[in-house]
Amino acid sequence: MKMINKHKNTADKKSQISSATPKRAQEEMVGFAIIMVVVFVILLVFLSLSLRNKESQAVESYEVEAFIDSMLAFTTPCEDYLDVYESVQDLLFKHFDHEPCVNDFSTAILMPTLEGILNNSWNVGQNNSVKGYSLQILSGSSDVINLGRGNQTRDSKGSAKTLYRSRGDPIDITFIAYY
Image (cartoon, rainbow, N blue to C red; front, side, top):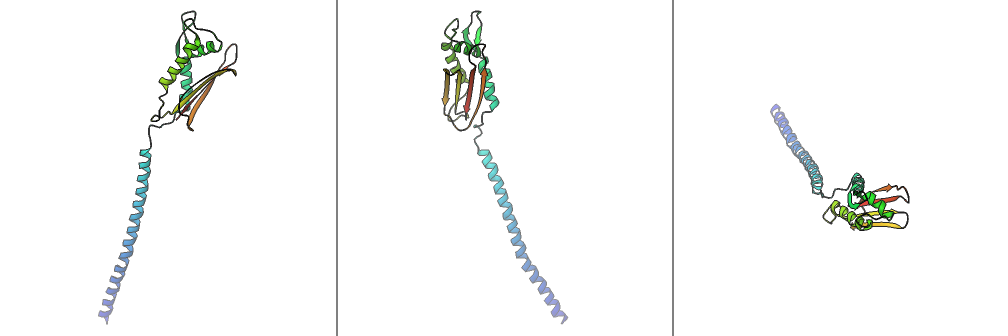
């Protein structure tokens, strides 16, 4: 009888081991599948971040403010009576006060100078980060200078600056870059 019990105990232990092995194997397979799903999701996130268009970086507002300041300080071919070349800011004052330069009318110098600064500073195009720009300069309600190029999109950064003259209305400058 002892032999039968011993054989029965051994058979029970073997059946317990063999019945536990499939459950453990199933648990390991489920765990492996979960790990694979997590790794796949992480790879998808990294892939989507790396495939984003790196060239389409937005224009920062400080860049627009710095552009306006730089544009106003740009030296133009307009001469005053002391053979000194005027800045764009001084030329704007002359333009809105209807004062000519010694070598030409201020309007004949102002518009090509502004267009040259804008075209050389902002690379506009469908394949570029800047899709368009708009420059508006006005004094009072009647005198307005509007220059623009490219497309106006929903994404934009802009800045405004006001120049105060000793006589007359202030000059309001607004520049918007679209990206």
